[in-house]
Length: 347
Image 1 (cartoon, rainbow, N blue to C red):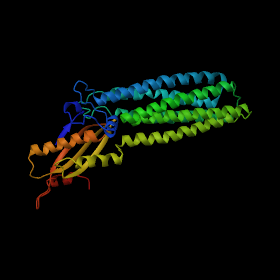
Image 2 (cartoon, rainbow, N blue to C red; image 1 turned 90 degrees about the vertical axis):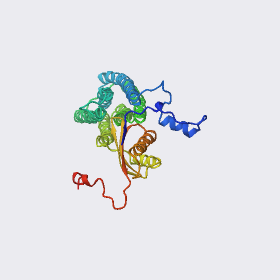
Image 3 (cartoon, rainbow, N blue to C red; image 1 turned 135 degrees about the horizontal axis):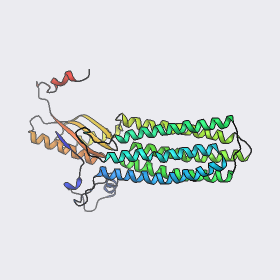
Image 4 (cartoon, helix red, strand yellow; image 1 turned 90 degrees about the horizontal axis):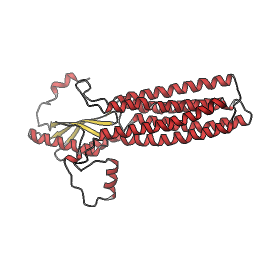
């Protein structure tokens, strides 16, 4: 049985060709690792640092966008722009719980939190989902109120410019957050990016409200506010699905297939038994059983388990630890050694 914690590839070099081809270069880009013993940055800490940087850059951009729009709302009275501004402000503030989660995720495991604090990121994702829901409720409430009590919208050209500013700021932040979130494996950061992208499209919808108001249709502005509410609900559905899957330890089945194929190629592995993958924050952990020759010594079985773990660390992106259990291949007439555990397993 073998278990390792954050894997440093620089500790055991592997032969690479003197002139790696395009496929190998691409593989290194997708799963970067260092072979230089003087360059051993913990990938978990590095990914957390990238997540923090993405959050604070996003907070600055969206905060400036929301402040600019708030000033226009104060002078124009546009409900559609108000809904967009509130959503932008809420999106900027989601950087706070995510930032706390990334900081917690850097803390080492201890006797109470034996897997570390990575799941704090999933809790932050839940906070983001609740924030999106609250912004949808507020935007809808204000829009319905304005439908019941119509008021004219002033400074329409400025409202249109504020809408374009909102779209540009949100789309830039969305692309940045989604790219970094996918690269480091953070479902919460990807959900936050989807949230920002919807904000961008709702900003464009404000233009329709401004155009309708310019044509003398007072209901245009609150109706666009309701459309923005509907768009927020749609992104709420997508974000909630992503976050709740992560909370329930869901992984991409293709990732499980990839891990199984890699381990089957390890010399000495006859079969792959139970294989489990789970996310802890934006890092993966694996647990699996492999079948080896029943006549293998303990040292030989352990060497095979270590080789299987090493293969997994290279084959599965963002995998930082694996627990590999070696089972002997059954001999004819031999009693299953796991039979004593049968009564502990669910029926």
